[in-house]
Image: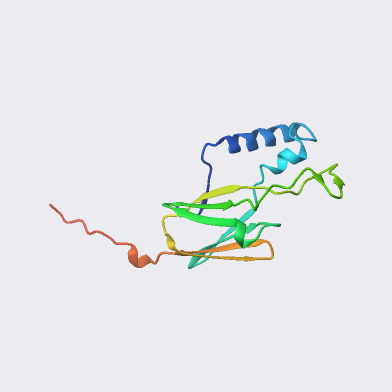
Length: 151
């Protein structure tokens, strides 16, 4: 495997996302209300490869470093939001929402790391709503060619 690939475990959340996209392709409005749609948020990600590392950038407007968790478990890298306190109420002091596309959302994105990625050499930074991960590659020195002797 040469690059980071998106990891889609079979979950109810993914099935709902797929169903929602399917209906969106046929109808202007989703069968889910905007408030329900926000619950299935999946942030946009860019991944670049250079000589020494993989660089992942994820758009997370409205989040901060305190409510984002990055985990590595074997070959899988997961980025998960941790909800902050109580959920916002539907009825605010300033009135009732007519349309609501922003909200207190949660997400869980998982990626399968390439074989040459070093899970012990991942650094993370958060600035201006962008989570940046720098995933260092293992050096070629770990690769070993085994000589085959004639029998």
